[in-house]
Length: 302
Ligand SMILES: C[S@@+](CC[C@H](N)C(=O)[O-])C[C@H]1O[C@@H](n2cnc3c(N)ncnc32)[C@H](O)[C@@H]1O
Image (tube, rainbow, N blue to C red):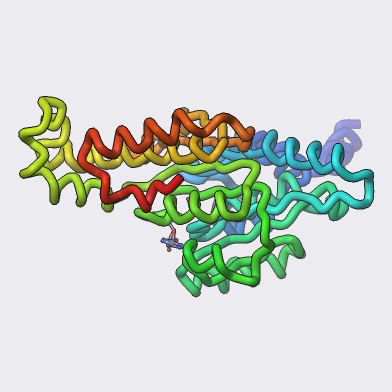
């Protein structure tokens, strides 16, 4: 009897990785998570990768309803088979954690009209090559990677004339501004940005400091070098938000929680609503003038 019980117990199937690790969602590609070094070769999740996964999920949570909104708009405009699916461009994609996990969770295995295509834009050729190979290995046909700068991609014939969703996660320096320019020209419905440090505005503040310091007591805000850098970063994001509003977008700024290790955890989500543009456009010009950044008007064009 005891032996039979033991034999019965031995037949019980070993728990799957999905049962062992509640962080892994049903159907999620284990191969992908191993390739991204989120899971170890043995299928284990260490502290670091658990945190990385949590961070990416957090962003996915913001993007999922935006994707659903695009599909709903397409559904309202066209019936059934005429739906095209969502086009999403991720700028400064790096190893494309975000693009791959988004595709795996939201688009994989869906019919064309209910899924979508994700384009990763990246200047480092070796990363583009690796991502292209990985997408082919996983059978992620709706993923393409282009070895282009963000600015080049705006003019590239390899991308469609309009794009539904644009993301840029810690795209370096002015790559976030180029991503905004891309999104405006491609008439993006939704834009998701987690900006990196931007040195350009701080350098103009620094250059003009001598002549501006006498202007107003508020110039004290960026008198000390560390303040010049920090205020430069902050005012850049303020100007980006005003620029997006001046193009008819509704803008939400929040904190990307779970990104505690990074200083740069400001999340800007913009949704095109064709809102009145005059007031934010005026405010943008006023802010540029108040802080002596008139020469940056082209960067934050309306
Ligand atoms: C800090 S990494 C972020 C990678 C990824 N988005 C993430 O969050 O894991 C920034 C990436 O942007 C790329 N990059 C920087 N400037 C770029 C530009 N102008 N156009 C395209 N890619 C750029 C870099 O090569 C790098 O891979």
